[in-house]
Image (tube, rainbow, N blue to C red; front, side, top):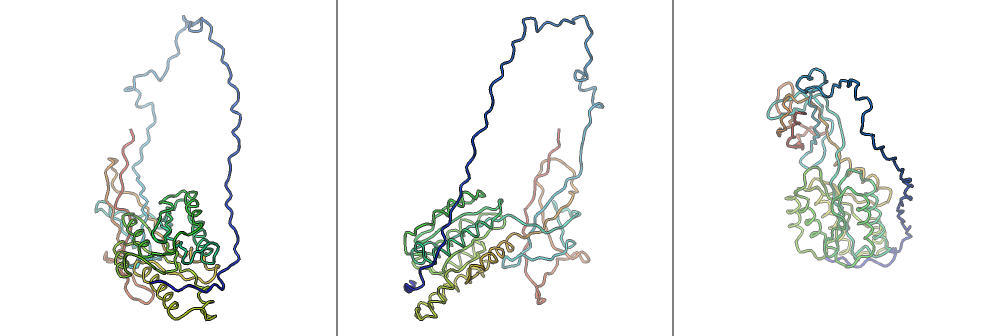
Length: 378
């Protein structure tokens, strides 16, 4: 579907230029001049006190006879830290589970959990950004809002987060592959200058990215910054839904141009067909988010952006941190399988989880499959 052209009115906006400051290293310090060492005298190797008895040294003792002379340290306490996320069938984190309801099985042997706390996990997220001449004309309001959202979310990331930048118009293009180097992320965002094509093939871009991320382990998601309009994709909306459900990557969508659309519509500058196109675009964004376990946001003001970024972080970062001392004291370097369960300690049966209305919730426990035991220190 192709949206009608928006009115020229209200498309100009006062923009503030953004400048990136690049730090420069200072000059290297003077390493100093080389100090010449005096040569040894010719008779330096001669020992003037050859008649004196040598001082006995403990280092020359037979190693087999000095075992009692050296201190040895050995610890039989192996502390294991396990990051666990409990999510519902929509991928939302379930908070407030008491620590006594967790059970850890190490090679099918129950472990005594010492401590359960709340923690934060690093993110693996792909920023899929619409950047075409459809709504991102140079210095236009859509262009400016797109860059505000992209740069704002990039600034909210933590140093340990993995992020990729994908821009799409007629086809998706990876501007920055997954990295923790924020300089590379900024370099990719700096390429969002002038759009090349007028097409905005949303379906192709989001399914291609989700398919690439399907094999990534851990907490992962797609941040979709888009108007929701698809103009010329090779696949249909229903095919896109199916592919996204199979990929299992949550989508967090942020809809563009919400305020501008309402202003133009209020002035009578938007027809019924164009209004229907935008409503359908919003519904598609909501559907992608709902069916993949994510969320959709449609901000009207710039002040809403930080709250949206915080909501995405809270949905993806939260986790439980379980700490226990392994009952297996062997230091053989073997792989030990782990399984985490939620149980009722009184009955030892699976713990039912209910929502605020008392309805049961289907949940999933996300944790690593095991760890490698340490080896004996020789």
